[in-house]
Image 1 (tube, helix red, strand yellow):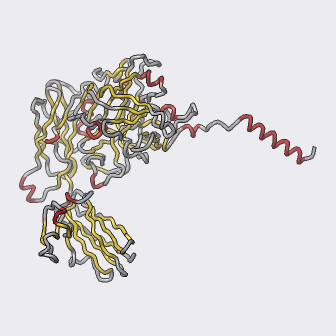
Image 2 (image 1 turned 120 degrees about the vertical axis):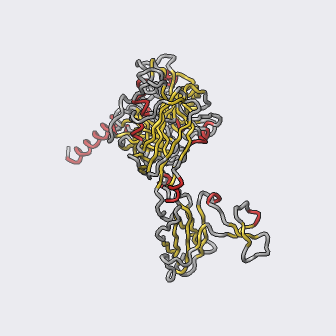
Image 3 (image 1 turned 30 degrees about the vertical axis):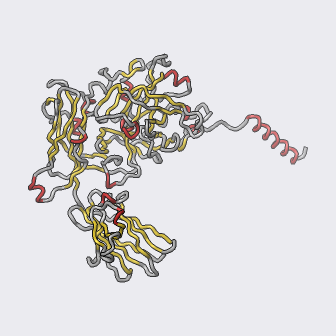
Length: 548
């Protein structure tokens, strides 16, 4: 047999061997899905354990995520073990659930109409499984931003349909732990993102304040991910729930609703593109024989009193630093109306959220009937906090869990500084060449803008001549109003149908004022100066509008 024939025979044997044995087994790293998730047939693929991550749907909309949890005290669920899902309390609002009303505080066993949709994978669109709510078993808007919902079915029935619960981790792992953050974004299916866990931090997103929540910067999970689970990459156990994020939020709005900030000492800090998550390992102590037992001493939900603030008497998120005349006029004072479900309450005024968890310097126990707290701020720039806890008697000794769950009201006193002009410039080349400039008025400390524009060679942004204030006067038909201020048209004073108007900030669409600037053959200079609430000007911003 010559060498060529031997080589051909060897190649044929190798080919037959590969055909007989089939493709090599899936590598271990391929069993951990990242990005949009498909349900895999591979028995070791992690997606097989994520069938119990569902989309929360109310009467009106469905942009939250919830997770079925494993509450069994034995390997097999009994026929009567309830099915519980957990999510962020902030998902249970009238925008999602219509007639459902919630005034704040802690709530137990409340009726609610809603549905959970399981099996939300990219390749199971025709096999989504839905189950109705039975009740909201527990809900709080305090330090524990959490809702526990009982479904109108049992855990064993769900598992028989292939819907698997997530096991809750026994303890919260340290910062640096590799995690998976999962959620169901708006108009999409289950996504999984991989990153590392950050250290615990106190967070504010008006009017909510959360103590010792975790952070992560897993990407690509935005609207719809609220309530989604955070899992250990290695054990697949449930560590925490997403309760807030600031993806896409404006840093100028830090600490406001949907723009959570971090509270460090007496200062609010902005960490962009961050999820904040509520640890849930304590829930392992809150189920007995598969049923929620929030009233047992071993559970951190035990004796958590309900403290709710009357919405009409909620202090603002921000006040501004005082000038000399304002200081002479006296401090900012707010009469905060609270509803407490215990006979008594105690409170503390501080500049640091950590002090709310320290039992010292709280007031004496006071009657909770028709409770009003006089919240008077000093003139210090930074955070001002009112911590409130309910107590059963004058001798009641609170636990660390109760102080951790204190109701915290924050007001930030902001130093007024010159504002950087904020505008966007678009270019259009249609029937004529023009620019459209859009000035952003959604800036909290902004009072107004002044602008000017002219030939590039002769327009100096640093000189005061030629500036005009925005909002500018615009020509409009008289019947296009109503307008707050109307002025006779200077070029057509006898034409009753044409007027000049000057809009207020509140009348602007999305808070932007737009102006068309026609382009010619030569470049233009556009100058913008912003003024803060003290009427202090910023440095001029110069934009060059080149010929189109």
